[in-house]
Length: 296
Length: 231
Image (cartoon, rainbow over all chains, first blue to last red; front, side, top):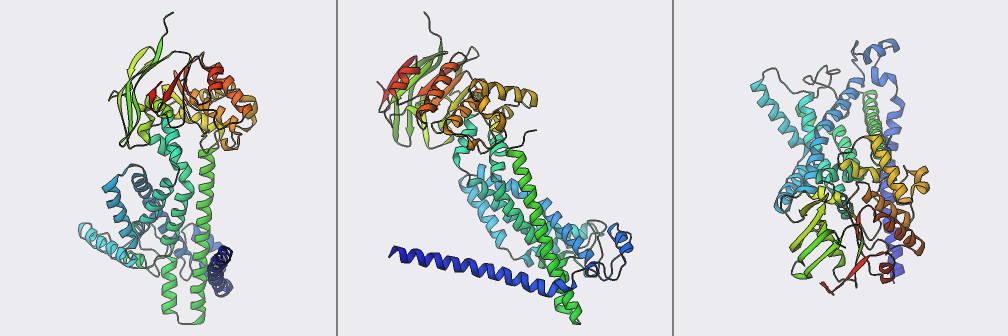
């Protein structure tokens, strides 16, 4: 009887895994099928010539009908959101895992769970309201990259807090006991022993945060993204972003070519996410090696 | 001959919740000797050891009554005094556990970690100390080419000698050993025992062991705990 259950579980779990794999493969294949034909310099830079593309990269020339400003805008958004949320998320995760006791832990956990469940449109509305308030104080401030980045940071913060907390809590207590027996202060235990061991777990939070910040449309629609803003020159400028470009193209396209450009943009967004994940993975690997093995 | 004391335990009782593990124990241990605490499993040997460096406080749910005095750098220290710095105490009172517990990092990092925690950041000095303790632990020739490999790849005996070297790198005056050979094979036990005998020139060793033959081989004195009381 047990053997029957074993086989049943094995096959049903395997089928679930295969279904998911199939879904991911189908989605990727669909994007490649529709996006690959338009993937090229023209998609990014429109009708500009090679020499002009160099000027674009050095901000000497404007791209009118290409994805390049949206690519730059998306990367800046991810960078801003992560650079704001990562230190905060790490700090709060460390506090919850290593310092908070009883009631404080329950309260903070509940708060972050609630924040994780807030729809992104509500975060967008919050960002928009914040902009209105700030606009009253400083009349020159309008929806911009800074507000979008901060709003996205708020959106991804719970992922970073929770993954940091879980990564630390999952470490065996023997590590803490060994460090204490060696004369470590609590802070030294956390910095020198626990965080390096928790890096893979924290990294999974970073990956989630990158994906979320790169793809979210609702937040940026209300806080500063514009269809044709070009590359932002400062944090207080409007900007373009790939998810908004995809949304805009998919809902407003006038011919087949435009729709295909939307697919191209979706493929580019996927590639950017994969590149960012890979980059984050390499940084994590390098950091782990440096912290745990390298000593030159 | 007057025997100089290194640790004095006075009327120590220890409780895990309502359960009393140690009952009113008073004993002192001599400097630069190997003192053994023997007894059956569950008699409170490891708990008694943990009252000396207050490591039991890291686990929680327990309380202690009584006093422990320790003489470090010629000064008498009340271990349970409120102002005492536990990290500093534990740097002077090293500990080796029953199961070898190298941290999941390189051999070299395992050894430099206590130095970093104690604020010793000079890399040349760190290298010097690493080489010195590994030589003292008869481990240098075995690990020199693989200092930057994962410490968990060493054999059980090598791991335990690494842990002793790690505990010794801050030159503690007292080394607490909680059944340091119980998980090792005969060859490794022999190596560790030789190492302990060589260390008593430099520090005082308090060793928990249930192996009476081992106690006879290495210890200068021994006490037996029976159900939380001294026999």
